[in-house]
Amino acid sequence: MQNSEESIFRQLPITSDPEVLSGETVFQGTRVPVAALLDNIEAGLTLDEFVANFPTVTREQAVQVLQFAKETLIKLGQVA
Image (cartoon, rainbow, N blue to C red; front, side, top):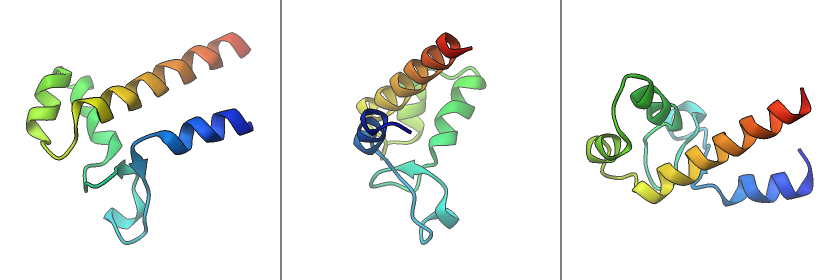
């Protein structure tokens, strides 16, 4: 990862701690895996439904993670 990408990654509202869910990446301040967001969207839930189901995750946190995923996929497509 380049320095600017590392900086952006560190600003994401996520964390990974071996003491929390065996180190799975979760939203900061929660025990909600980031993968749960993607799994719920894949299952057809809206972002608002996800946030209602996981009230410890804010809508802003979820949007920030989705925006990062979108930007990363776009960059990867430009490299290919």
